[in-house]
Length: 302
Image (cartoon, rainbow, N blue to C red):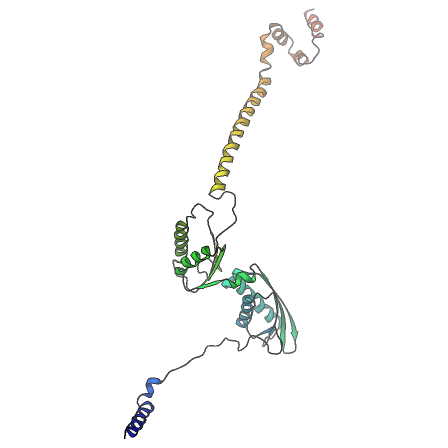
């Protein structure tokens, strides 16, 4: 009897699931796929494919993420070489200037295309300003609130730089970055050290990646011990300049002496009389022949 009851209960439960309870189990599903169904050509290893501008951008970002320096693209459904050149130029500029990872890691992108049967083959070369290890150590964060803990962990691990890819920035994102750095530097007693350098990629307004240089190279004029040493040297240089100024003043006074030389002959009465009597012979008195001057005076008296 118990077996019959259990079987009947199972049958009733199954009927409920198939009728009135079935709407509760209904779900709608959606799948998201890249615009290009496949990035890599199946018949050629290391060769990417693209059919429009966005495909080319995705291909280039894929290469940047792998730190690939050279690659080959096959472009389909392009009608002319001019259209290919325009798309390649626009896509390369977008990756390098408008994407966080491209602005952070890429130094240059060059492309050259060749027409093939049914497609255009493009040779891509990418130069990097960051190493593969630097790209692999980029950390993802949802918002600037995570920067304090990430910076603290970087200091604990002895890192000299930290790159964080931001999922959300917000209106006061930069203020929160500065507050996190100021709080951490004060807690770690680093306020007297060289200030950290912060770089925003691709732009400062709404960056997608923030780079922190925790041990930047010291430069002249920065505050701190080096700046104070520079100031002390400046004072020493100022003292030397003061001495030089005094010497120059003495030299200036010595130079002013010759200007008073016409007055010195005036102190001797004979010279003053001779200058008054014979003004034309005054230039001769400056010469080194005083004896002929006596006959000249006698001739004048006669």
